Length: 564
Image 1 (spheres, rainbow, N blue to C red):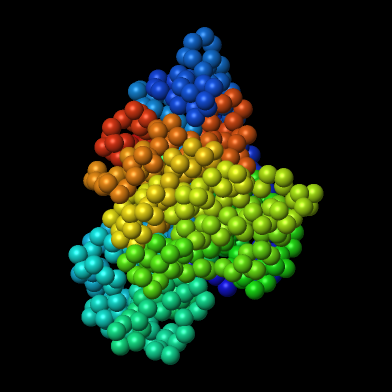
Image 2: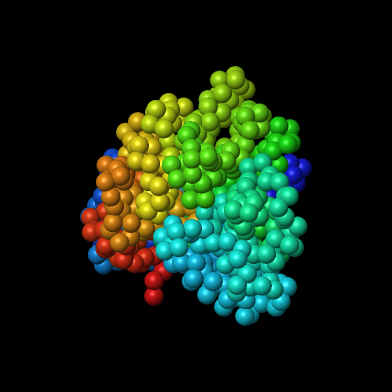
């Protein structure tokens, strides 16, 4: 959620990264390849489908028809017969949390919990293996489908965990439920004031009910299990391996702890992380961000660090997303802004002068409008002669609920909406309650944004969502939940074509990371990053997309994953 990382630590970490950034530039072990035997999609409008690809030293040396002497082999060349499988440019998750993805595999995973009753069952099982007094931490629950029709509370947790502090974070990371033991250990009482950008929910008697929203989660930060260097390293390795197995070749990793970047460089150099990582660093000490000094962009072959991640508001599910009008199902609540105008102004002006890419979380229509206002103000208040990069490519992460009047502003300002299609199929079941039908006109408005001239960097927001490219592709093209359900409020005209969906996870994320000249399409001279599925997801039925199997994931000519 948040961090107490100071600017001094942040700058020091970047300096350390700069000193160690070349560590992963080891001698290439890439193999040469000749690949044919299936449909190959390039995501390049000039040559959309080809039959054959040759790879030399990790780069594409041929992309075209399977005729003539295209496969100039040598003793190092290996041949891949796709045998009817389909290959694509490497899929990129343009918004995920690599550390969280790995930690999800190592902790109490509450993903898929179907009720408060099941939540208690899973918690009770975890308590049996946890010594009294030790914190039980879990993540992944979401209450929107639960029969109880409410958030969990401390009494629910107390029933099965009276002797252990319990902290269970919601799937979106913007809310947590804690038990009485955790409340006591953290010193949270009826008199405790909610921090700016956070809320301590209360029961009818005015007592804290165990639900903490957004920055209120910081109140229990000291109770969380220690995140040692060894544990973080294990999480990064597990997360990257999982992603390679699912078909991702690249992740735009959000909210990265600055001091972790040298670790990522080292793990990549050691071959323990096989996918590409584009880091957005977590910078949350808002009191001193205005003093931000110049930062060097740090790039190497596999790990790139050149962006920061900011937060404008909370999440829709926990009613923390900032709205222009109150929630339809909570008329006294308009959500939470997590940043103030003057804080945003100082950060953004400094970022323009430093050449730092800014990626800001915004979900509600108020938050999206304010972020667009903040970006526009920075663009106009800082003379272009002082911009370090004339093409900053700032992004709004999520861009979920947008007032329709603001949709054209993305393209007009050159702002990239970074969106996660699976949010739409998850939110389908509660968004109309939160917003009412009228505000859904600008909700998850993929096609409207594309029609306005914007490109969309597609991602998953894992571990909030599963983090599966098949689900994201399905969601973008079908706009239905995984059981095939939609409804009249869900504006299915906002689904996109298969061609657009492919670009959302290949060419457009490459552009959003300043990598369009080296990644994102299958063209001669670009890196040999490929994702191959056992079927053609561009033409497959919806169900067949969801059941496609990954044949291999290749990054820079090296196999990151290969099915057995």
